[in-house]
Length: 393
Image 1 (cartoon, helix red, strand yellow):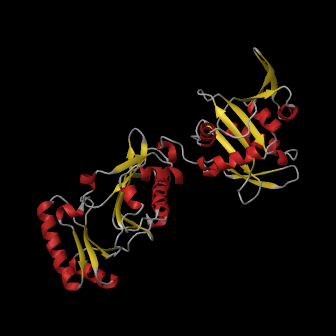
Image 2 (cartoon, helix red, strand yellow):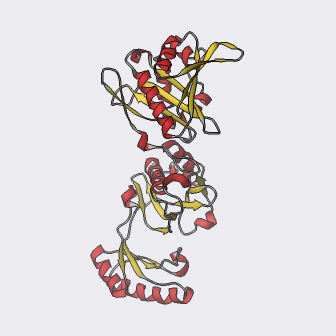
Image 3 (cartoon, rainbow, N blue to C red):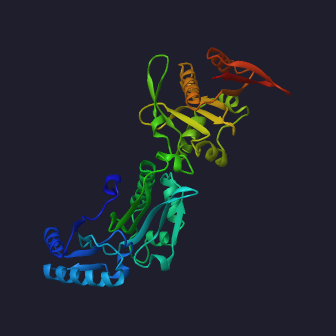
């Protein structure tokens, strides 16, 4: 399962008895690691269930027989399914980490990261976060731990590959989103060095799913299904997707390439660059009561041509829209296409009405809204702004 989600794992063979373990070791190649296989034993080292660096068949046979005897004495209740056999992974200087995933009854899936190994409970160096994660959030989770400072390297010891570790954390978030049956997952240890990562041991617990897909999540994950494209009136297509937290530079670039007067029409006040807090507010959304679509100028996804946004009221009956089209992409129907996409999305959500506040002098937006069936409404005590409303149901 981990390998399917891009987490490198050590080759592992299972063997139902001692002689099968010897044969598996022969196929794997020496030296090998032998481990007891039992669903009831989570921490194998606690019961003598791990033997490292076995150099030949005789050593495997002796270790397996001794392991069965010791485990039976310490855990007579455990059902022994056999052994697992792995090649000995030699990564001098690698760090031992623990990655975990648990389905909390209150918060849903929770991801854990920390310093791993057999002393993980004693060291107690871990941090937790709610999925979904992106690269920035994964690195922030890593840096909440003390071991993160070691991972940067020290006194001649090379640092670890942060991208590879963050990628494994992202994989856990994907597993949680795809598999509602997944109750608990633990990778310990995950070896990490400058070359990358490899999982040496893992356990997974499942049960019949009570909630499907991402309904268990405290934070709604990135809705990949909404990715697509829009066309201008000349039938040219533009890639489009929901906004992501890392899109703040894209929004800054969009503002820098938009006429100040167009920005005043959008934000109802002069603006050339988004304050940091506002940039975070506009790009780090929960995808539940708010949605924002970024329309890209071309397939490179390096420049935004337009952004459209819907923000639902707490009662989820109506939502406010906002659209900004880059100045050099105006006049070709992108604003109209984006508004249609927002209307379609609002209907998918079951909203009854969408509305927007538009300056009376913003003739282009007023005409666009009226062409799509919006009606004008005045605002009490506000002479310069109109509220444009569209009834959906």
